[in-house]
Length: 299
Length: 263
Image: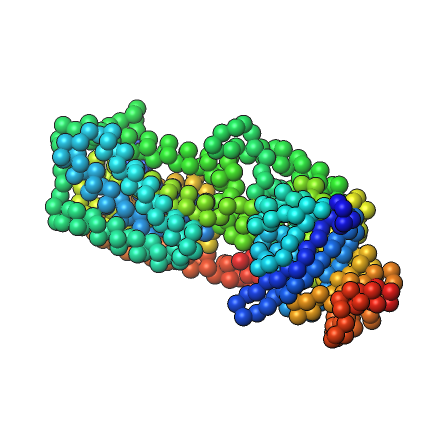
């Protein structure tokens, strides 16, 4: 509303549909990150994974591979990366932050090694570009992919035993384990989810850019965490939803859109997101400390 | 059940690094009794029960349930043997509601598919019925555990263990964090469960509790069994003396048990 007063163009249908479209790539990564956050863990490697998958897929398309094979390879890389992260964190009990910081560097390094400074190009006539440019009714295809994926992941989380286990693990991993929940299995599953959503995001971002290069997914992990937290997800796990992640992704897009309409430099968006994320994390941490001081069982 | 015991643990040993937590411990639990398990801190009480509940695995020893030797490697194995444990720290997910905690890991589902869909209606209905049956004063099974008192949480932990009709209940200091009124309510519930036919091991530091509702009491000290006493034939001083001083140095365990059992 505030933005609508500052700039009348903000509240036009065209601009709001555009905001939804702008939120879609970050939103796709965010829904995976929401699952991860609710389970009480983190995946910092998603941005680098988007870069790696983008470089791989676009180099294949440039080399003449068909779209189905290319997409399958992209999904397989996401799946394998998820299993790799999941085994390290879920089975070996490695620290999720440091582990995925390490795999982030690995994925980024492979993408750089593969592409160097080269921009792979998607052939102009390739139907792959429709992933970004196509429309379904009034909505752009990326928006539809984002919302359908979010709906599926929301329903799995809220209506199935997978979701019940994820909330339990995020709330009290030891209690979940003692109740017979296969914690390692679900940890691996969460990393597979972020791997696959990164692969889908890589498809959309590659189609939108028409190219693939090693830094295309730069800061995506941060944008997704910002969106998840801005939407109201709890960084310590056990609370939150995919719906909140969707709302958060739209809020981040609105924030970026507002700053652009107000004439700020693009770099300002990153600073604003950083301030908001740090502030919200501090607020959640203080709230948690306060509750734990009155009831030590509420960790 | 040739031996007459619902649970028999023989020669259980467990070491954590350089600490010998349990050393050749035996435990026998009769059907439909409350067996108190007492001892000082680090006596090995919780470790012994965690082995029976599948949370830890023993380094050596055998476990038999109703005369059949079993292998308990994790909590799911224990549940298959009809064993449920209520942990000292309750092992509840504070972020979840009562029903979700009761059915955690064993949710009712609808349809047969890879993604099993929760039957929430059935879980809430059964949770409400269970709370009513156990006379647990909680307004709704939709209430989140983080909004409950310590006593209510303890009751939820008990309900969680009882929900699936486990025959053997292991309780680790259930009254430790409760006020007098809440502790009495819980002790009455434990007694009711015994009267319904459950076999119960009750770990406690509060010896009067076990003397009030128990049938026998087993004493552990330094990871070794000191003896089993018949509650109807001993007093508080006898139990405390065994906890503090242990059995006489060179006596055989059986001798000690007989001597102490007859006070």
